[in-house]
Length: 97
Image 1 (tube, one colour):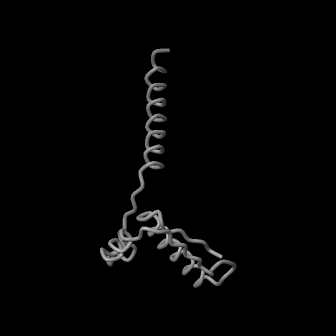
Image 2: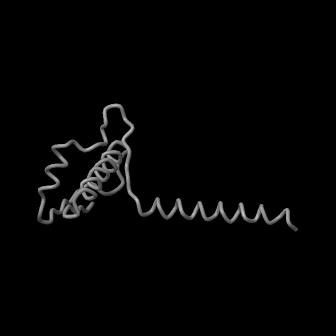
Image 3: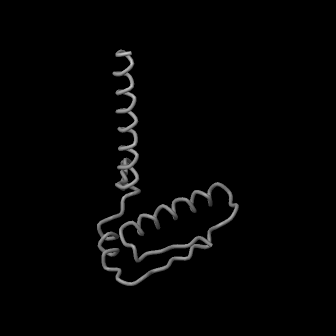
């Protein structure tokens, strides 16, 4: 009976650690750009421009539907860029139509 207690404690601690990491991951947001040319990092000029936006900006992107893979990639990269803008300034909204 005593042999099972340490194992049970380890399982409970492991589950608590998993829950804690999951909670932290869902509440703390950070992206890392590991590309050599930092292609997914916004430039200082872009960040400074985003800081100056004080009124809502809505971007409507007409790029929705069943497209070939090249346009699908354009859709995904455009969405990621607009999401990055929105993260840095909540005044920027976008819609894919």
